[in-house]
Image (cartoon, rainbow, N blue to C red; front, side, top):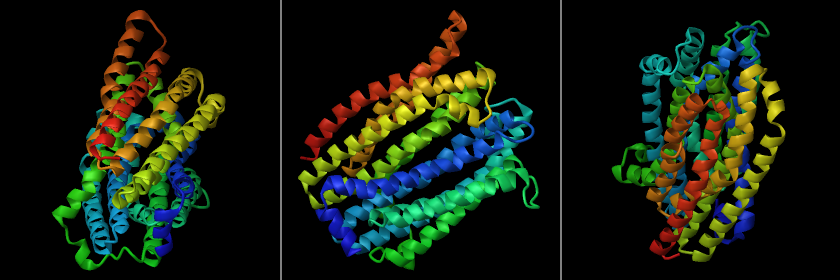
Length: 455
């Protein structure tokens, strides 16, 4: 741990950003595997493949919400423990970790209850197709009732990242993703003597991978995070510690949760055009997560680096963290843009798409991906704001880019398609517009925060 602390204090920021960022990027990209792999396998089921894709799209917002609350709590404990360790306060770091685990238990109980009582009305509110509705309910109930893997993994992963043990958090994530990939065809198609579970099998494979990742991360935390001791007394809830965790974490939770709200809202809006739009959008959203989650991974490196420097009151390292964080994020998003533009049509073939659904999916890939450059900058700024106690600023960005500038505009474009017989593809223009306007606001907010914090 001493070597990790020395690295956080002395390693040049550009090298530190890469050494911490690359494992985090890999970890987050692999997290996207859970969603996209399920889609790839269920789309090739013998019967109702497209209905199965629609079902996963209907369930997806709640899956994102689980990730949002787990990761948001993890981001809060990540930044807080990094700041405490930067100040040399190991006791507060332990208290932070213990209270984060207490909150993870509360979060898990909430999703179990939702799995039993909330899934059916939630799915039914988005769709009238009986087959895809039943598939979605089966899939989501399993994911909610057995959600402890993803919830607790989010905490242990961020604790490992906060102390520089990035390799171990990445190993945990990779192991779970690989297990998910292995189990998916076995559970979905009924291979090697197993029962053919269909869409429900995809859910079983997903939660099995999440639980395996969680167990590995717990083992690595106990073995290697020597300076973050989680004593039984630290698990007792402290309103002060919980408030400090969520002062940082709530903006991250809202940022991720708004993705769920946006996707849910878009499903309802696009359903007015047709099921093909819902299927094309939900699948595109999962594909683009490989790019967005890479940016989230680097953001999760930016936050502890800048937060640690902020705790040390080292303005030079703070400024370098901001500069290199934005620079590397833009490189990632540019690469993502090129990949999506070049391979739009091949991606459609992987999922067995054809006809109108394929054309809508390809148009989404080509149009929405234009927003990557701007969304990358916005994601980086959110991590910077979280590290500098700028929770309000981070929240503003999230609400703008995923709610205020998305749903009303998308709804307006659907009216245009109906009234003027314009192609449905015009709805996709909503996303580049939202990201461009948000990044302008982000620059203004950052300048004000710099003055406020005397950086």
